[in-house]
Amino acid sequence: MKILADTHTHSIASGHAYSTVDENMRWAAEKGLQLVALTDHAPAMKNTACHAYFANLHVLPDKIHGVRLLKGIELNILDFDGQVDMDETILSRMDLVIASLHMPCISPGSRKENTTACLKAMENPFVDILGHPGDPRYDMDYEALFRVAGETGTLLEINNASLIPGGFRDGSRENIKTLLRLCMEEGRPVVVGSDAHFYTGIGDFAYVEALLEEVGFPPELVLNTDPQRLLSYLGKE
Ligand SMILES: [Zn+2]
Ligand SMILES: [Zn+2]
Image (cartoon, rainbow, N blue to C red; front, side, top):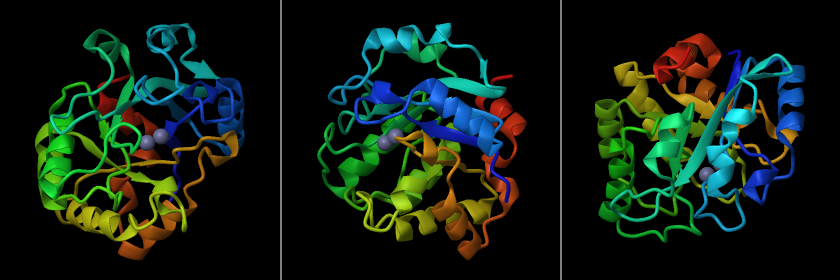
Protein backbone atom coordinates (compact mmCIF):
# COMPACT_ATOMS: atom_id res chain seq x y z
CA MET A 1 0.00 0.00 0.00
CA LYS A 2 1.40 3.40 -0.94
CA ILE A 3 0.20 6.08 1.46
CA LEU A 4 0.68 9.50 -0.14
CA ALA A 5 -1.07 11.75 2.36
CA ASP A 6 -0.72 12.28 6.10
CA THR A 7 -3.87 13.85 7.51
CA HIS A 8 -2.75 14.30 11.13
CA THR A 9 0.47 16.16 12.08
CA HIS A 10 1.58 18.65 14.71
CA SER A 11 4.11 21.49 14.74
CA ILE A 12 5.86 23.33 17.59
CA ALA A 13 2.73 25.46 17.82
CA SER A 14 1.03 22.58 19.66
CA GLY A 15 3.30 23.22 22.66
CA HIS A 16 4.35 19.58 23.09
CA ALA A 17 5.57 18.95 19.52
CA TYR A 18 9.05 19.76 18.30
CA SER A 19 9.28 20.68 14.61
CA THR A 20 8.42 23.67 12.49
CA VAL A 21 6.02 23.61 9.56
CA ASP A 22 8.99 24.00 7.22
CA GLU A 23 10.80 21.01 8.77
CA ASN A 24 7.62 18.95 8.55
CA MET A 25 7.02 19.77 4.89
CA ARG A 26 10.65 19.28 3.87
CA TRP A 27 10.57 15.81 5.41
CA ALA A 28 7.23 15.05 3.77
CA ALA A 29 8.72 15.94 0.38
CA GLU A 30 11.73 13.69 1.03
CA LYS A 31 9.40 10.84 2.00
CA GLY A 32 7.48 11.25 -1.25
CA LEU A 33 4.24 12.40 0.32
CA GLN A 34 1.96 14.53 -1.85
CA LEU A 35 -0.23 16.00 0.89
CA VAL A 36 0.08 16.84 4.58
CA ALA A 37 -2.54 18.27 6.90
CA LEU A 38 -1.24 20.52 9.65
CA THR A 39 -3.55 19.82 12.59
CA ASP A 40 -2.24 21.55 15.68
CA HIS A 41 -4.14 21.20 18.93
CA ALA A 42 -6.99 23.64 19.48
CA PRO A 43 -6.80 26.15 22.37
CA ALA A 44 -8.29 24.08 25.22
CA MET A 45 -5.11 22.00 25.31
CA LYS A 46 -2.60 23.63 27.65
CA ASN A 47 0.19 25.67 26.01
CA THR A 48 -0.99 25.05 22.45
CA ALA A 49 -1.63 27.58 19.69
CA CYS A 50 -4.02 30.43 20.37
CA HIS A 51 -7.12 31.47 18.45
CA ALA A 52 -5.14 33.94 16.31
CA TYR A 53 -2.81 31.17 15.14
CA PHE A 54 -5.71 29.37 13.50
CA ALA A 55 -7.25 32.61 12.23
CA ASN A 56 -3.93 33.42 10.52
CA LEU A 57 -3.21 30.05 8.89
CA HIS A 58 -4.09 31.56 5.51
CA VAL A 59 -0.62 33.16 5.38
CA LEU A 60 0.83 29.70 4.73
CA PRO A 61 1.13 28.70 1.08
CA ASP A 62 -1.00 25.84 -0.24
CA LYS A 63 2.16 24.05 -1.30
CA ILE A 64 5.47 23.93 0.56
CA HIS A 65 8.47 22.08 -0.95
CA GLY A 66 6.07 20.79 -3.59
CA VAL A 67 3.75 19.14 -1.04
CA ARG A 68 0.13 20.21 -0.74
CA LEU A 69 -0.58 21.64 2.70
CA LEU A 70 -4.03 21.41 4.24
CA LYS A 71 -4.53 23.95 6.98
CA GLY A 72 -6.37 22.22 9.75
CA ILE A 73 -6.97 21.83 13.44
CA GLU A 74 -7.37 19.05 15.97
CA LEU A 75 -10.29 20.05 18.15
CA ASN A 76 -10.80 18.91 21.68
CA ILE A 77 -14.18 17.40 22.46
CA LEU A 78 -14.93 19.26 25.68
CA ASP A 79 -18.00 17.57 27.13
CA PHE A 80 -20.58 14.84 26.63
CA ASP A 81 -22.61 17.17 24.42
CA GLY A 82 -19.78 17.16 21.91
CA GLN A 83 -18.87 20.84 22.33
CA VAL A 84 -15.54 21.78 20.75
CA ASP A 85 -13.01 24.54 21.32
CA MET A 86 -13.13 26.70 18.22
CA ASP A 87 -15.75 29.02 16.78
CA GLU A 88 -17.55 28.31 13.54
CA THR A 89 -16.05 31.29 11.70
CA ILE A 90 -12.58 29.81 12.01
CA LEU A 91 -13.77 26.23 11.43
CA SER A 92 -15.48 27.26 8.20
CA ARG A 93 -12.08 28.44 6.87
CA MET A 94 -10.23 25.21 7.70
CA ASP A 95 -9.28 22.71 5.01
CA LEU A 96 -9.57 19.82 7.44
CA VAL A 97 -11.00 19.45 10.94
CA ILE A 98 -10.29 16.57 13.32
CA ALA A 99 -12.18 16.20 16.61
CA SER A 100 -10.66 14.02 19.34
CA LEU A 101 -11.03 13.02 22.97
CA HIS A 102 -7.98 14.03 25.03
CA MET A 103 -7.55 13.29 28.72
CA PRO A 104 -6.50 16.82 29.72
CA CYS A 105 -9.72 18.21 28.22
CA ILE A 106 -12.36 15.59 29.05
CA SER A 107 -12.27 12.88 31.70
CA PRO A 108 -13.77 9.55 30.66
CA GLY A 109 -17.41 9.09 31.59
CA SER A 110 -19.74 6.13 31.21
CA ARG A 111 -19.86 4.18 27.97
CA LYS A 112 -23.02 6.08 27.04
CA GLU A 113 -21.50 9.47 27.85
CA ASN A 114 -18.27 8.84 25.92
CA THR A 115 -20.21 7.56 22.93
CA THR A 116 -22.60 10.52 22.97
CA ALA A 117 -19.67 12.94 23.11
CA CYS A 118 -18.28 11.47 19.88
CA LEU A 119 -21.64 11.15 18.14
CA LYS A 120 -22.45 14.80 18.85
CA ALA A 121 -18.99 15.91 17.68
CA MET A 122 -19.50 13.98 14.43
CA GLU A 123 -22.84 15.73 13.96
CA ASN A 124 -20.94 19.04 13.90
CA PRO A 125 -20.95 19.87 10.17
CA PHE A 126 -17.39 21.23 10.34
CA VAL A 127 -15.87 18.02 11.68
CA ASP A 128 -14.33 15.89 8.91
CA ILE A 129 -12.52 13.24 10.95
CA LEU A 130 -12.95 11.59 14.34
CA GLY A 131 -9.36 11.43 15.65
CA HIS A 132 -7.91 8.26 17.17
CA PRO A 133 -11.11 6.36 18.01
CA GLY A 134 -10.29 3.20 19.91
CA ASP A 135 -8.63 4.76 22.95
CA PRO A 136 -9.44 2.15 25.63
CA ARG A 137 -9.56 4.80 28.35
CA TYR A 138 -12.90 5.92 26.86
CA ASP A 139 -15.31 2.98 26.88
CA MET A 140 -17.31 3.23 23.65
CA ASP A 141 -20.16 1.72 21.65
CA TYR A 142 -18.30 1.16 18.37
CA GLU A 143 -21.36 0.00 16.47
CA ALA A 144 -23.05 3.32 17.24
CA LEU A 145 -19.89 5.23 16.35
CA PHE A 146 -19.68 3.45 13.01
CA ARG A 147 -23.37 4.01 12.24
CA VAL A 148 -23.33 7.75 12.96
CA ALA A 149 -20.02 8.22 11.13
CA GLY A 150 -21.83 6.82 8.09
CA GLU A 151 -24.84 9.05 8.56
CA THR A 152 -22.77 12.21 8.98
CA GLY A 153 -20.04 11.35 6.48
CA THR A 154 -17.39 11.66 9.20
CA LEU A 155 -14.22 9.71 8.51
CA LEU A 156 -12.85 7.43 11.21
CA GLU A 157 -9.12 7.75 11.68
CA ILE A 158 -6.68 4.87 12.01
CA ASN A 159 -3.98 6.56 14.06
CA ASN A 160 -0.42 5.25 13.97
CA ALA A 161 0.48 6.68 17.39
CA SER A 162 -2.44 4.76 18.98
CA LEU A 163 -0.82 1.50 17.90
CA ILE A 164 2.64 2.08 19.36
CA PRO A 165 3.20 -0.70 21.92
CA GLY A 166 3.45 0.86 25.37
CA GLY A 167 2.20 4.16 23.97
CA PHE A 168 -0.26 6.32 25.83
CA ARG A 169 -3.23 4.89 23.91
CA ASP A 170 -1.97 1.30 24.24
CA GLY A 171 -4.88 -1.11 24.12
CA SER A 172 -6.51 0.63 21.14
CA ARG A 173 -5.69 -2.23 18.80
CA GLU A 174 -8.72 -4.48 19.32
CA ASN A 175 -11.12 -1.52 19.19
CA ILE A 176 -9.56 -0.33 15.93
CA LYS A 177 -9.88 -3.83 14.50
CA THR A 178 -13.58 -3.78 15.35
CA LEU A 179 -13.99 -0.52 13.44
CA LEU A 180 -11.93 -1.77 10.49
CA ARG A 181 -14.06 -4.90 10.18
CA LEU A 182 -17.26 -2.84 10.20
CA CYS A 183 -15.82 -0.54 7.52
CA MET A 184 -14.78 -3.51 5.38
CA GLU A 185 -18.25 -5.05 5.56
CA GLU A 186 -19.81 -1.87 4.18
CA GLY A 187 -16.95 -0.78 1.92
CA ARG A 188 -16.58 2.40 3.93
CA PRO A 189 -13.39 4.49 3.50
CA VAL A 190 -11.12 5.48 6.40
CA VAL A 191 -8.23 7.87 6.82
CA VAL A 192 -4.86 7.14 8.38
CA GLY A 193 -2.86 9.67 10.38
CA SER A 194 0.63 9.54 11.83
CA ASP A 195 -0.19 12.04 14.61
CA ALA A 196 3.50 12.97 14.40
CA HIS A 197 4.81 15.35 17.06
CA PHE A 198 8.32 15.38 15.50
CA TYR A 199 9.06 15.63 11.79
CA THR A 200 10.51 12.14 11.39
CA GLY A 201 7.14 10.68 12.36
CA ILE A 202 5.40 12.23 9.37
CA GLY A 203 4.47 9.60 6.80
CA ASP A 204 5.41 6.79 9.22
CA PHE A 205 2.51 4.37 9.12
CA ALA A 206 4.38 1.21 10.09
CA TYR A 207 1.90 0.10 12.76
CA VAL A 208 -1.15 1.11 10.75
CA GLU A 209 0.03 -0.74 7.67
CA ALA A 210 0.80 -3.90 9.64
CA LEU A 211 -2.69 -3.86 11.17
CA LEU A 212 -4.44 -3.15 7.85
CA GLU A 213 -2.60 -6.08 6.35
CA GLU A 214 -3.48 -8.32 9.28
CA VAL A 215 -7.22 -7.70 8.86
CA GLY A 216 -7.02 -7.74 5.04
CA PHE A 217 -8.26 -4.16 4.72
CA PRO A 218 -8.57 -3.13 1.05
CA PRO A 219 -6.03 -0.37 0.15
CA GLU A 220 -8.63 1.35 -2.02
CA LEU A 221 -10.64 2.10 1.14
CA VAL A 222 -7.72 4.09 2.59
CA LEU A 223 -8.29 7.60 1.25
CA ASN A 224 -4.67 8.56 1.95
CA THR A 225 -3.55 6.35 -0.95
CA ASP A 226 -5.27 8.78 -3.32
CA PRO A 227 -4.84 12.46 -2.36
CA GLN A 228 -7.17 13.60 -5.14
CA ARG A 229 -9.96 11.38 -3.88
CA LEU A 230 -9.28 12.52 -0.34
CA LEU A 231 -9.58 16.16 -1.41
CA SER A 232 -12.85 15.56 -3.20
CA TYR A 233 -14.21 13.69 -0.16
CA LEU A 234 -13.33 16.77 1.91
CA GLY A 235 -14.94 19.04 -0.69
CA LYS A 236 -11.56 20.61 -1.56
CA GLU A 237 -9.80 20.89 -4.89
ZN1 LIG B 1 -5.14 13.72 19.50
ZN1 LIG C 1 -2.85 14.79 17.33
